[in-house]
Length: 128
Image 1 (cartoon, rainbow, N blue to C red):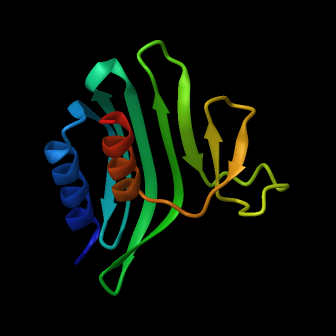
Image 2 (spheres, rainbow, N blue to C red; image 1 turned 90 degrees about the vertical axis):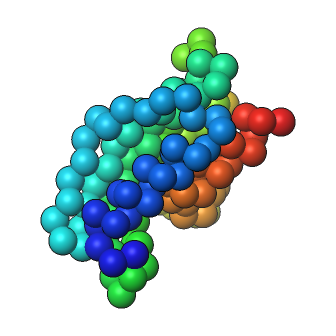
């Protein structure tokens, strides 16, 4: 990646080619040189939704995600998973990184994750 705008273009391309993404909406984007922020709402096959949020910086061609939240829910609005690095849940071994798995209260350890990885997981899990 050369800068934040380049990264946004890359993530949009991943959404376009992802077979589970029917459409997506830009909720918010910010780019300032190497720093940026994205928030997109994706409608998935089966009417599920995925909201992706990242605050990031491109350093020497690599994307470093400082803050993230990826909220995936089914057509009925039920939480499937939400990965985030909010600083609550200090009891989790991977603090601040964690995943809410199937329910808000079901918090599990999870390593850092980014938009590219989440899009791949959603594509794999949603297709079978």
